[in-house]
Image (cartoon, rainbow over all chains, first blue to last red; front, side, top):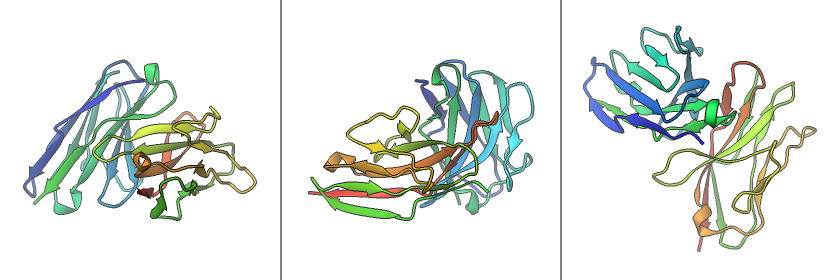
Length: 115
Length: 110
């Protein structure tokens, strides 16, 4: 299985600021994803992070609000821009492919609180 | 549209009792289904997948295409089974996207 780490594990931010979350996988993977898990709710896919090209966003999510980078096969970042309290959530990175095979493995999550 | 439904938000059972966590899906093709579990203060992790037809920690799940269900079962619940359980559907296309259900919290009472 792939081991995924995320930084930061949690943060408290002010309205209007931006936060970049990093996701590191311990091996090369084919696919990386970013999810949001709002309190008491399920996981919602934000986007697929594509290596070397623009991310593929799901309905309701846009690049200006959630810019994503994936410079190589083991690393990705998600930025939450111009934050509001509604962005308070857990943000999860996941990966599959490579050693992760076709099973999706998850990072520990980043708990974001926006005041 | 593809959808995964877990009708129970919370399921409480006594230790030693049988457990069944329900999952129904909506997908016209041949789905791939998974159960993920999240124990307290731990990350989401794969419990089992229907392709493997395996038993993990005493849990099994059978894909019933006629009923479009993938219920998770265990004959004798243990306290350590208390966790959040998510059913997930993977659409077998090039996107590898997963659709998650809303989750069921299982509480096993002593």
